Image (spheres, helix red, strand yellow):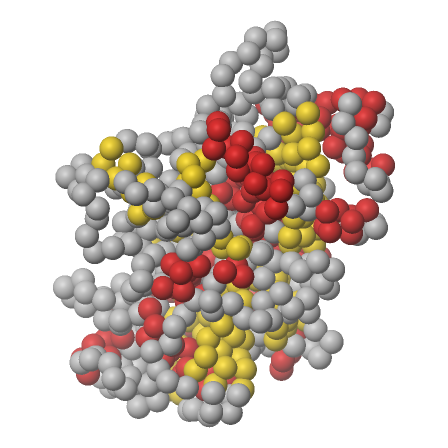
Length: 624
């Protein structure tokens, strides 16, 4: 293949390997952009793209006195969330994708993609984005290159990854990298040379988000939004990375990472936690404890890569450098740390615009303003009868702007993990907290997580769905094989494996009211878990796992009636019978690929249910 400079007249930076030049040239020859820009990640480059997007109408510059360095983007109404129905795992064999993924034949999909990408960038600039997932040069970090025709993607990737020249230099030195190709699918010139005007948010009704596990490729077409387009995020950091992790004996997980320091003795604990969307993940990542004696720092809010270290313990890094968070519900009450991080240099997408040039979303204030411009650019008042901000509207901000950020959040070697939390949004059945009996039981707990559907994904909002390890839309291969990999990691870690807990902040009473206050008071639950890790507290064996012994959960200062506390820990055999039946039905989807250890855990659950029934009364009703 000819050099890039010979084929379309744009030279690569010096030192770029011929293999990279050839790949970029091949994509350019397929997509036929007007020009190519190799991103260096500089402030000057960012500012130029900001100005171009303001001029085009993609960005609204916010009031710089109120929110300096910040901008608002409004997407097309058809392009507002991840499109799971158009997300494909293109493995060589359908059984390797498994029943929870959309499989596509890789040969057929390549033909389809060649068709839609042909000429897709006519009239546009093609941006080449070298990036690092994780601190540059770290032992758990990985490199990639995303090609895109969206400047919105470029400036978001600058916040979400370590993007630019330093990453390219490591690729130039021969380090492994993953290729990712993206187009909004809105060429400005057709194949006959006819031009059309651009739009503020270009996209295409046909969408494909494709991962090729065997060749480690990512191709995304038609969407400019979020994880559909920021290919370092879910596509690389979870779908492709989960495949790499299985082969290389590490874990790529949809988990936050926290450091908690006990001030009485200075002991540090590190916790990772997997929650489906709208289960308090961001709030927990920026937790402000309501109990004295604990300092909480953020290391990551969404994704954790974890690898055994030289001492045999599991070490975690946050592979991202920014937060791509859901705006609605974020407030001074629910998550002041996140809110304060947005004071400057933030990209908002699909929130409302105030008359003084600031942003607003549902939940930000108790009373909405009298007038707004909504997320679609229309006038809005409290009587409009529709949300002012889209339920999945977002903010993109550099993680270092959070006042809770740990000084070690970019430590290349990561932090040692003491405990792993799994949680979902359940109104009954699952207690406030329980500890897994062992690693295999913890894997069973993670495999059977279920939660209520939210606006971040397609489907009926409020519908209960299984979301194992909070990885349902993100696992790059057969979910049952993923469970087997977790079991294998437990064998590798042995006695150094982190302890596993299940939490549920969302139990309700018969009137539908939440029983637990949540938010900062979740620190009380984590304190109990960490004191279990430290060997300082006993526990009570129950159907779901080990529960707090009476008096061991710190509820000092809480207005929590005794009957509510009892309900939070009520573990009812009939409800768990139903849970076991649903789990058996769910496992049946995977046939004989379900690891024998998990079938054994299901039988152990049924045995605990039978044992509970054999006891008089409700032996698992704990008065903490």
